[in-house]
Amino acid sequence: MMLWFARNFEFLISAAAFTLMLVTISANVLCRYFFSYALPFAEELAYLGFDYAVFFGASLLYREHGLIAVTVFVDRLSQGIRHYVLLFNFLVLTLANAYLCYLGWILSQGSWVRRSAYIEYPYFFINIAPTIAFGLMAIYSARFFLKTLFGGVGEDAGISEAESPDAT
Image (cartoon, rainbow, N blue to C red; front, side, top):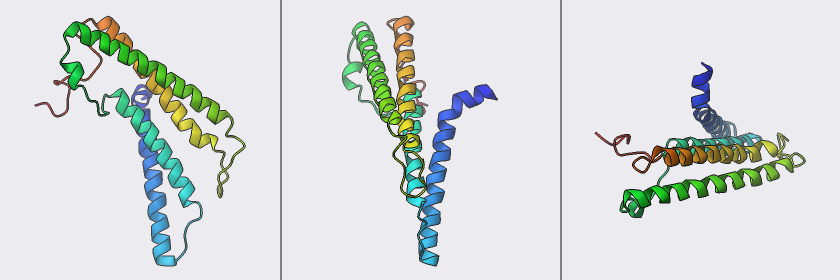
């Protein structure tokens, strides 16, 4: 059970956040339509749900190689050169995501004093989502780098045609 949660926690957080956003917005629309009354907390909860759904969803897609990539030039390179290009790519992504995680942490630390308008929760809970997501993407990038480094020239960490959901 714990292993299943560890493999799917990004999906669970993203799905729960998306559900929170969807239910909040729907309830607010229905209340405004039928009762001419807007829920004052709806915008804050919807934004919180949006924040977690986007960042944890992006982290999940990054881990699964589900983000869009333009590889037309890399695919035309020889296997040896392609291997080094992928190593460089994953190294740069590791460093960039680690730096973005660091910046997110700096932003999060200073956001305990600022509170949301109606619910008054600290903005820390908004700013920590990208911090965690970029931290996870830094870990995944490092894992992809190591897999490409030790996998040899013929194997890289990218998704292959055979693993693609569109492949038949």
